[in-house]
Amino acid sequence: MLNKNMVLNFFIISNYPDQEAVLAEVRKIKNHILFDADKIAKEINNPKGTNMVVLGAASKYLGIDIEKLEAAVRSNFARKGDAIIDANIAALRAGREVADKM
Figure 1 (cartoon, rainbow, N blue to C red):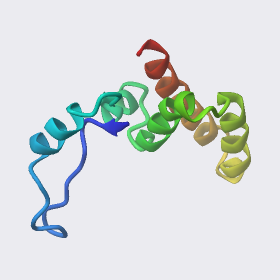
Figure 2 (cartoon, one colour):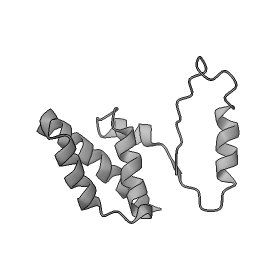
Figure 3 (spheres, helix red, strand yellow):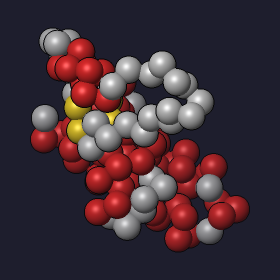
Figure 4 (tube, helix red, strand yellow):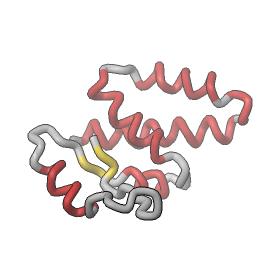
């Protein structure tokens, strides 16, 4: 599983391969899953939620119940308030929705 819109930091890793070259290699893998998690996170108004989108999508293939992940988000983000909890749960669900459609 790969976030299609990877952010490559050329200042830190000067010899990092071209993004299209990386994507071409990923596409060679039989059971690859490629989607734009950044775009999905932005569409749900949570641009910082990219990792939650990926986690939600991965949960289907890792055999982790989405409800357990939501409970973990509630527990881990409780001190940050309901808005942060809700945003992260929305990102999880958006990622899972992508996986369910594949």
